[in-house]
Image (cartoon, helix red, strand yellow):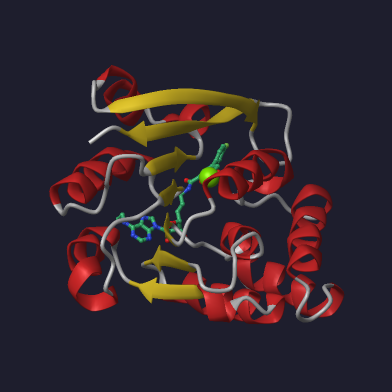
Amino acid sequence: TGSTRPERILAAVQRKATKGDARSVVNTIDQYCRYQEWAMNVGDEKGAILDSIVCEVKPSVMLELGTYCGYSTVRIASMLPPNARLLTLEFNPAYAAVARQVIAWAGVEDKVVLIEGPSGDWIPKMKEEFGVTSFDLVFLDHWKDRYLPDTKLMEECGLLRTGSILLADNVICPGTPEYLEYVRGSPRYESKYFRSHLEYTRVEDGLEKSVFLG
Ligand SMILES: CCNc1ncnc2c1ncn2[C@@H]1O[C@H](/C=C/CNC(=O)c2cc(-c3ccc(F)cc3)cc(O)c2O)[C@@H](O)[C@H]1O
Ligand SMILES: [Mg+2]
């Protein structure tokens, strides 16, 4: 019963990254996943696009679907002002346990609320449990066939307001065809594709940024 990939990533962070330095945690994970073993973090190239959108939107309340090891959680949190909040959903307890430690090592735990459980259960409870009115920005990076149902669920739960932004990873690889067709075809969204590459590779992938028009 050896270690899991997320546990090996955590070990690399605790061995090589400077405690309390979020950028050093991000760089350590990128180094590890580029030169030791690949992992499904948004990565440095798409991560730079993510950074620019977080900086542009300056969200007060943000949601991330699919924490995994916490790489994008730390990346986003390091860009947020002190009073902003990032809620991140992860339903695999082992991954959540790793992510909590990565988030703590980076020193961003004050801006992050990691919620352990499936998005389908928690999205309807966001208002009552976490006092969320609506999300300024949502980063979708969980199971690709769940992007569309969860987007519809957020609409139904009144968690999107005019101007809320959805940013979806992997719209090319592995691909999210139904989601893409929906946001690009719906008059309620203004969508834009940011071309990039699959993390740590030369394979094409990209992010889709969709503004909810109400
Ligand atoms: C049940 C839906 N609700 C969920 N609620 C909460 N957490 C969820 C949920 N789904 C999945 N998760 C979690 O999100 C993470 C899942 C992410 C899925 N991502 C991918 O499959 C993915 C896959 C690739 C990829 C690309 C090319 C390949 F050859 C192989 C893999 C690249 C990526 O950037 C990816 O994001 C896990 O931590 C999982 O436990
Ligand atoms: Mg991804």
